[in-house]
Structures are given as C-alpha cells and as structure tokens.
Length: 619
Ligand code: CA
Image 1 (cartoon, protein in one colour):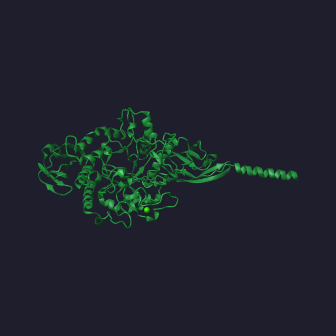
Image 2: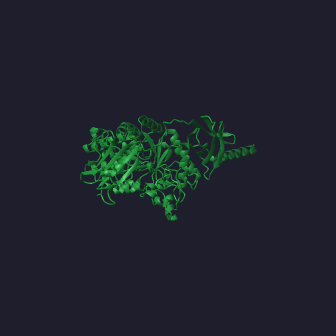
C-alpha cells in the first residue's frame, strides 16, 4: 500500500511536471490574412505569429496549394510558410492545421479569393489627372463617434495642433461632391492605416498594423466603400505607403522575429535625412549608413529590407491592398531611405502584377538629376534602375515658390521655371513627374507668396498647363495659410466646415470669403477645362525664354494648340507674337480659357500685370 501511494505521488508529480514544462502553443495571426488565385507570381509567403508556434507543424491539404518550405527562425513565436499556388488552383477556403504530434493545436481558415480582372480597377494615373492631397484627420469629421476608440492610445483633442482632431473616411466620402465639383480626378490621402501610438498619431506615418485601417478613420470595409464611391464619381484613389519605417508600437514590438528585423544601433541614431547620399558617387559610408539605416524618428523603427522576410512582408502587403481594394495608385514615402535594390525589386514585382500601375516616390531632393536618379531610367552611371514610374517635382516646387515672388531678370522670376524645365533631359519620363506648389511638409503656398492672389493665379495657371501631373494640397484652393517652423499643426489645420459646429463652412460658396471664392472659382474653372482638354494633358511642350517679364509656352496635340502667357511683372504688356509664329502655325484666332474672351488677330496680345492668359488657338 505504501508503495502504491508512493508511486501515485510520483506519477502525479510527473504529470504536473509535464504540464509545467509543456510549451504553451497558440496561434495569434497570419499575414497576409488572405490571398488570391490567378496572381502572376505563384509564390506566397505566410508569416505566422503565436506563442511557440514554431513547435507546431502546419498541414495544408488543398488541391493546387503546395507547401514548398516551412522556415523557422530564431524567435520560436514565428514561422514562415512558403506556398506555391498553381495556375489551376480554384478559389476557396482551406484549413491550415497546426499540429503537435497527432494533436491539432490551432486551425486557421485561409481564403484564396478569385482575382478580379476588372479594367475599371487599379488604373494608375497619368497626365489627364489632377491629384488632391488631403490629411484625413484634418479634412472632414463625418463620424464624431469614432474620434475616440477603445484600445487606441491617443484620444481626440482638437485644441492640440499636434493631436487627433477626428477627421475620417466618412468625412472624405461626404466631400466627394465638393472635390468632384472642384475638378480634381484623384485623391491621395495621407496614411489611413492604424497608428496606435501615444502621440502624434494623426498624420499616419507611424503605422502599427499594415493590414488594418485605423479605427478612428473607419474600417477596412469603409475604405473599400469610399474607393468604390470615388470611382463612381470618376475619382481615383492613391494610397500612401511607407516602406522605410513602421511605428515602434507595431504588434511585433516586443517580439521581433529576428535580430536584424530593424536596423539596430547601439543607441538611438537619427537619419541624416540626406537622400542624396544614395546616388552620390562620392558619399562616405558613414553618411550613407546614417541616411539609410538611421531612424526617421524615435517612434519610427527603421526597417531592414535586406532581410528577405521583411522584404516579402512589405511587398506582399502593397499587392494585398491593391488587389483587396482596387486602389489606382501608390504614393511611396521617403523613397531614398529604404535599400534601393529592394525598392527596385518591389517595383518589379508590383508591375509584374499590374503592368500599367503608377507609384509616385517622394524623393525630396532639390536638383533635377538627383530626382531623376529615382525615375525608372537606365541612364544612371552606377547601373541603378529603379523601375519607379513617377516622382514628385521638388526642384520645380522650389522654383515656383521663388519665381512669382521675384522681379524678372536673367536668372530670376519665370527664368527659374524655364531653367528647371530645360533640364528635363535628365528624366526618362518627364511627363510622369507630379508637380505641386506645397504639401503637408512645408509652408502653405499662399503664405509663401505673401497672400497675393495674383501670384496665386499665375502659379496655378502654370502648374495646370506645364508638363507633369499636378497635385493640390487640401485647402490651397481656399487660400489656407501656415508656416512649417510654427509646427506641423500650422500647415495641417482643419478644413473649415469639416466639423459640426465650425464657425464657417468653406465647402460651400456661402461659407467662403470673397477672396476664397475668387481662388476656388479660378481653380475650378481651370481644372474642369483641363479635365476634358487632351491638348493641355498630353500636348508636346515648347517654351520660349521669358522676355520682358512674360513667359510664353505652347502645348500641341493632334493638331490642336494651347498657348499660355504668364506676365510676371507689375505692368500691363502688349506682346508681339511674331516670335512665336512657328508655334502658332496657321492658327489665326484664340479664345481665353479663363475669361472666354476671343481674339481674331494673333499679331499682338495685351496681357494684364501679374496675370496668366491661357488661350486655345483655332484657324
Ligand atoms: Ca471621426
């Protein structure tokens, strides 16, 4: 009997021990959460996260889906599964059983959706478009109930210029008619994905879940509905993505898959923000490393895209969003900051799935050759070919900001515009450059031109008629002001009328001041003309050296001609058109796009001080 009890106690102890030491295994999530059949690339890499998930063995039985490789890494809470999805694979749902021995520990129902080949989706954007950049938190609050959401660390505080103000997707959706009336054809919203950070979460550049819209903006479904509604009104949607960094609050924050998941430094090291070092043939390794591996901010972890699993994670995520939502284009943040070979590979894989797609990269560099390095071409001496389809025109933005503030001279005033454009030979695709006068990172344009509406009209007329794809920052059309040195809140103010109870509503004519209506009506007329005029959209540009303070250029397309004259002086001018006879050709008449005034004689044209003339020529 004594022996029996002793054995029983021993057995119980052994069982307790087994329980104590048996590894707890659970499944937390799988990224991407679902995928599609019929993709050009048959490979899919699943990242599985869960406590000790590496101790389980995934089992998949589905016709056409083959487990090529199961990869375990240094952190037992991760597993990567490489799948091959054959061409004949049918859409459907299959179980991924995670087994330990014969026991199934967890099951994930993985869906393969059918790829929709709808030509109305993911169109890309081109010279027929005018992009409208808006900051979702600051544009319009369509749903005050989502301003504060459970589990989200930062709550709304509209009195704090750096806090969350409550704007959202419903607000964006509510203003689609306003935007359609204004004449824009594409919306680029600053990032909408979850930013569950304790502060400064409103701007969206510290993403904490790449597969989820921030609940304070809405749900993934709300985003899809918004895109559909925008498409129904002829407006494309461009998503803002960031491959360089993620918020330090990302779900894997205390549990990184690998030691080299982020670019780690012995102590916090900030990027030097010198994107030029990446193309600079004389750059020191020290400066290059700081640019590419330095952190954008303490709250923004610098990603190591040289880690192939990280690279796949980002690339698949971008493709997932396009396929999931029918997005038309991508704006990629801080383009020179991630490893450049990774970025080229991303573009290659993206264009493999969507050959006509467009991605505009933010290469914030002030000289045309530095920007051109990033635009597709194969002319770079170091052999780098980015595959990138579009870039922003930072050099022209700087020139525009100066040109209309200066007196005309050999190298001042509109000569600055002429000079920047004359360097377009460095670009493989100059028409693919996105032009702008301001954005969410710099002084508001109306402030830069001393709140002078005449300068404003000159700049807008120029941007909408020269080469490139114009982009307007929200509020520019109603002359919003702001200075970057006062803090980003000053250049990202709430659009008046976007919140219930706002003192004024600039979304309506009645709510705008006379000056605001003058600016709004000017842009509205210009954009609505541009929207249907293929000559200004796709025409071949010829410009003439500015003379007597007037800059004249032409757009020609399929026998049609548009002539643009910018008088950047404080005097009315009579311009003798003899010099432009080659460009005028056999046209004898003209009509102003802005005033509808007509001319029956094209020998001389009078142009008022500090004003533009856009004239459609005819025989
Ligand atoms: Ca809201």
